[in-house]
Image (cartoon, rainbow over all chains, first blue to last red):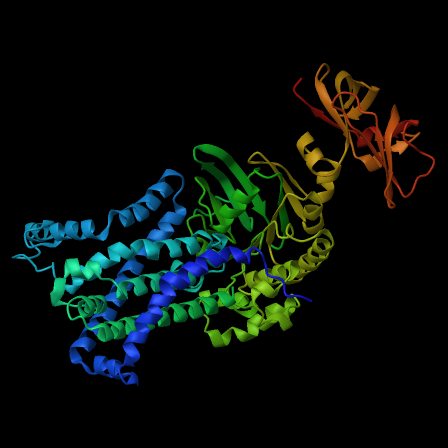
Length: 276
Length: 357
């Protein structure tokens, strides 16, 4: 018997070819730069990167900001997804447009809008002082908090939409069945609703986290050069220091984290989905 | 609650009214069930039977009226405080839990430690003969098995009332009949008070002590199956519960509770107090009709003869909106399509309903 190729599978060929040439190949070349020296293959760049305290601080800050961004986005997105799943007709459209439209606005415009909000004589500070919560202006711009708040805003749609997709398919009779079996709203949430929507939470968190660890424009505009992130370090290595092996090494570290997040989350999603 | 305000029925839904988006679907509904009874709410879709079930379960709030269960007014109780279990149409089993975890759910929701649920869960599973499936995921079960798990899950908590929303509709016919017999004996053995919601009259008659036939948000008749079948209170009940021959006509004379009615098939008699000059609908159950015998007789050519084994069904030529249907026991040879026959039945078996002209 001859092996037959599914002809529908051939439709993937242009996409795969494109990814191979435009994505995989340059990435491999980049990775090669991080381990190739005049004497052959060496992991010296990695040893140097991990032994530098400043680099470690940047790595830790990047992970922390990404994690906090993910948590904040999740806290806002989870109830939003439920509200969206209940919304009908024009309201659903309003929700979806509200999710998608800001994505087309561009981060630069948003970042400047935030600076109006966050700056010393900005709206937030004026309001806080007016209601008497603070005596003087609080420093908001150029802080990690502002970065997390801003980043969560940018990545919110990537958290909301996967959760919404799962919540929309949640059988509304399951919480009802739980209630008729004597389960309080709290018990229903933790034992029915949450476990059944967890795959959406995992997917949304994976999207948000992997985008947040590699963000460049948002931290550049909100916190500037003083608090570097991994992506800013990479850009600096290539553009200012002209140190390609260093840039490639940091890129590889970032890539490894991203791959770990994707693999781990898909493993988690499969495990959660296996029983359903 | 004021003593004696409500009669002492085990379950009483009293003066229930409900609107959806400004449309009244139910008003002044009264529904009573005694302890240990198996009752069905029977009616076409949209008649309000599921609405009533959901109001009793606490999954829907009534606009007006009260629900009393076991002497306790539960009208404002949320579903989880009513101790009323529901078996849903597609069972609504939790897909992320195993069979045993599904059954244990209600016990854990009531605060029982996970370790203590083992014994009651095994007992409930053995009751529905699902012991060996305890650790299976729900997705590995057939429809009938899922229904058994849903029943075990609903009963393990010792509910004061069991509500079943079209519990057999997702099963094929053969399995449905088996499950009906099984479930009925389980509920009777345990003395469970249960309310079934169904649109299937055979199912309702098979499982219930009494049936409430609902139409357009009202109960048309609430009676035991034999009364419902033999003495339906309205043409709607007559048509919804079983088949019948229907002939319309006008009352031409009335004498001591017996009326004479002129119809397209001649003059027929019925026991009724409908007055002279009114339009009436006459009905007869098909198995009460015989060939060449009876007090009321009509002569009709047969349009169809169906030999079904246990019975032979004759269809007579219909005039106007009438319907002529006769069921003879066993296999009756010698009759064929086109034969002109005389069909007859007793005056006492003739149902008569006054209808608007």
